[in-house]
Length: 140
Length: 315
Image 1 (spheres, rainbow over the protein chains, first blue to last red):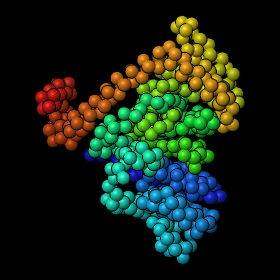
Image 2: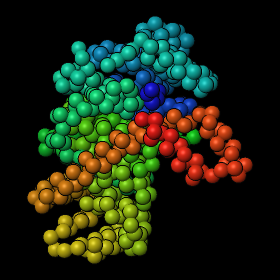
Image 3: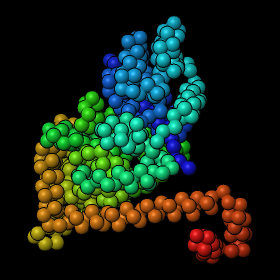
Image 4: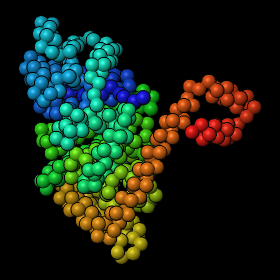
């Protein structure tokens, strides 16, 4: 019997101070019984991946409303591979056009949420994805 | 490779996984800790506690900077509360601690209280064991924002820094039992705010009265402004002076021995709680008993005796 909780790191990468969205997600995840580690604004991909490794999270969620998503998402994915942490689920949200959303999900971003997505959808997605990950990953 | 080998090879991922493993109390976690315990005893554990918003995280950030300058490896445990309603938590201490993210000499772990009410999580002590085994010279433990009685920190560290702010109260508050008694060092943070002079002098007076004899440690009261790192050098100097002091007069050892005793009790208490109390939950017999008590046929005290006797015979 273990007392496992879903742990999610939420971050705002790059020069983008619009944090209302990610705070709504943080509160929704908390109320869904998850442990949410919020790192705040102006995070580099390096900082995000290091924090994800130290906090041993199941998933990392980033919110990008600056238009830099085609740079930041791949940079985070690369950093995860480089540090051997690409089993951690990367998802995100923000002002992201449909074409880019498709490209990002092909690159390895597990899911991109766009404006209007209900918080329940994100919660459901995380629960399912973490469950699948834990079944694959029986460590120690 | 075996996770312990990876751990002893300084692999951060292995350290992180072991902490989760222990925090979740996954099968065999006690055996894992027992193995790690062979390499403990070197880390100095510093506790930072105080009311919410006193600046504990910012102070921790400053302490990390200073200890890095002294060539120390630093591990941080930062605790925030778990919701008693949903079981979720928002762990926000990292927001203040951004600048070391790329530095391999600093490791920062956010933890949720997960039902514990003493200002820490029950896994704190186990995580200090892991940090020590991993080779962190300094373990910084930041409690949740506390009131007057969440004092678990004293069982988990070698020195307690209590952080308050000028708004924390008057002379009577400084004389109260609880939080005000556990400090080895006081920090009056946000000391640029009005009223700091008054609280500092009142605290100093109270601490002077508390001294039992001339050989006692003089509890210093240090005004700090963590946000601009003002007086952090003084704080570090006092922390190191305290450690010297208690190592010389033997209190360091006495304190650690007491903590070992407490640790044994906690290991047992946890198992008892889990094996006994958890076995009662969802038990059909218990539902009937509750009915009987509610209807006045019996009482919680006799039932307690009866269940306890059943349990102690079962083993």
